Image (cartoon, rainbow over all chains, first blue to last red; front, top):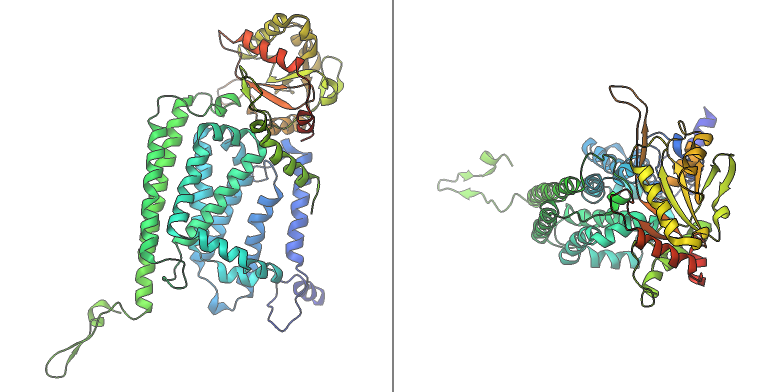
Length: 336
Length: 214
């Protein structure tokens, strides 16, 4: 019992306040050690791994998804019960991180390397779905509670703030979002990105990081002053990024020549699906789900506007003074 | 912390830009130029029929062509190997510096003896290689090769699928070319022979030697 309590304190899982000496972050270092062990296992027994094990182990991707999940859970445990985010937000965060891990590290990577439409599904999960869910959960407070102290100082440093101020603007954020999709869909660049291990990692990391930057910018629940830009600007950005993606998806879907030779060269998973058919399916995946995500984001931003107006006093409805001293209040029929 | 992996990545980043650096001097290839993109040759297998251990050091100094297949393949592999034999024949005496590495993706069914008999049908320059499932998995991941072996059952027979591209490595072991499928009815025998001849006669520059380390 005493040993258990001591371990709990040392692991950094207990509550920590500003007055206490911070214990060594054992949990995070245990995860790093676990990552090195998994690395060795993947290098030694590549043919005997279960499907959820990393296909091509990358320490950055492994720790980059699992460490934030660890810190979030730790932040949940450290937060007082009243300040913890709701169940939906917790599920959204862990689901988003889980999707990003699944698409970057599990056996799915092998599938996504050998069919174009599965590659497009991978990009959809990395760039739209996973980061969308993570941003939806708005995890900053919980993660700051669970993060090691030194890291927090680095995140609040000037270069990071300047970078965010430049990138999280409607114009730069939107152009980067669509521009990266267009870049990695250029046939020559796509070919080299798929065969070169280094460029493949660059492609995946740029998609995940840019997805996070964009959706954190778009789904920010705060109004214009703490947030980098106004709600209207965010609505416009989310709407306008839809159209280039529709154009790119349509061009790929209706193309009559195969554009991506890599999948023929390095082998397809389902040889019965022809190159053109694979390309058509991939084009549909670029076209339709991206529009859907933008539409959902549009509705979520409008909901954020509504919530903000409710918080700042009901949206301008004023009570009506009728003759005879009666006051007609709109709250009797709006309920607010 | 600068460890071997990050040094290798730094080297790879610099070298990924290398094709741009010397694109002024080189003539176009008939096949797909992948210099600097794919990793250098690195494999540990057993050579058919004897079973001697075979690594990339055994083809250092020769141009190596890496191809994945299986001996029970009805059409693609025999056609590809036949066309590769024709390429070697067309190259004449220069073909002594070229080795074709035929790696089986079905080590359960392809024993060393069978593999040895199979590749001997196509010519002396073709080497049959058989690895453990782990060794094969490592190699396939390295070169982005798709393959699958499905045992019979559920209404279908024994099914094996594999990619049909051929990877060409130069004398230092660096990956240089990707030869698209030679299993078609009209492959570019002259073009492939010209490319391989160029790789054989090339003086390995410092850049290529360094690329081979990555």
